[in-house]
Length: 115
Image 1 (tube, rainbow, N blue to C red):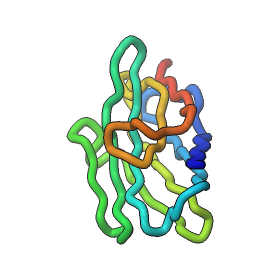
Image 2: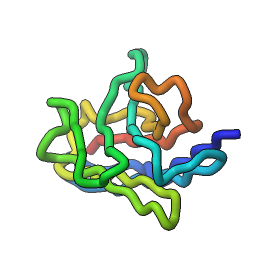
Image 3: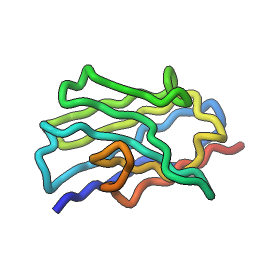
């Protein structure tokens, strides 16, 4: 059974940074692409970033490119999302997922960017 447990969300001021973590279990993490998606209040799921089996393969949405960095630790079955220069529009619940659409995802962690 796939389990994804996110952590690291918090209230942060505009311009601040956060690092989100997601511990995965129930599948072969090291041979799986991993994804971060988010949901802003009142909106649908939005793909944020992907990381390939080869960790050098990283993809970002235009809205977070050059501000967010995805990484993975296969030994710990963990995927990370380091977020810099956070803006109010980054507010939302962040989920890690095993697919780009977020159909298989954890319960998420809440990020609030506000002064």
